[in-house]
Amino acid sequence: MSSTQPPVSSPLPGGERSPPKAAGEGASANGGNRVFSSPLARRLAKETGIDLSRVEGSGPHGRVIARDIEAAQSGKGLRAPGGVPMVISPVGPSDKQILALFAPGSYEIVPHDNIRKIIAKRLVEAKQTIPHFYLTVDCDIGKLLAAREEINVKAPKDKDGKPAYKLSVNDFVIKALALALQRVPDANVTWTEGGMLKHKHSDIGVAVAIPGGLITPVVRKAETKSLSAISNEMKDYAARARARKLKPEEYQGGSSAISNLGMYGIKDFSAVINPPHATILAVGAGEERAVARGGKIEAAWIMSCTLSTDHRAVDGALGAELIGAFKALIENPVMMVV
Image (cartoon, rainbow, N blue to C red):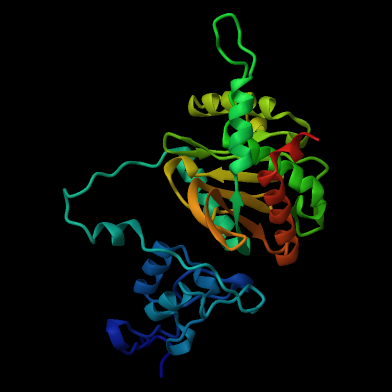
């Protein structure tokens, strides 16, 4: 056959055709090799963000076709530059694919602001890279509520009758978690690939809802602060967070965090860890429940709390020890001031 004769391609299922032997197409792979791919495969790869050079082709002569891109979205048929198998996280449907499901004019598109984009990116990274596991306890907060009421009643007042502080249940939660981390120092850590960071202080981030998302200001050295100091600091942080006036050093870092949805009536939930933390405590609503004590049914104020942990840094037994220390403190608030 003459070398000037045009190459012949053969049809494939789905309307695709095999690549000509004399001409390459597609992107260049490592080592200067050409990646043969169909136009449909290239378009799908572009829409889903998949690198064609990582995809094993199943078409004639190793050509990458549409079904290979579809398989790659679930992590199948992928390889690293050295030929090592590689798995990537599945890519969700494109904007175009989602919009096609709804009738034009039946919705309004609200563009994402930078805060929402950052939150989305960090949460996806957290769930993809941190092996979460969860521990839940029910805490009897009867003594806490009584102590809170007594402390608030006796708070000193200024000349206008305004109290110097007004403690919330969340202030006790912050203090209890801070002290628990000091009692279980092996859980007051941050995972890095090079080694474990063991923190000397309990810097507690507290999730605060703001328009369009949330932010987590950090109470530094919370184990050293009084309940009234924590309360006033959090009120200041919350006000400035909603006005978007927090400084980066006021919401970055920390060794653990708290997310409290009790004020919304949520009984219990599991929170997503906020990197670089290894733990986060999800706090539900305090509510009167029937409990058994000494063979009798009694009413008690119970609050459910769930600890999410990074299993690389805090394993099951250590996590149980930490949430056990928290429960002991929150149920006996006098232990927080001794």
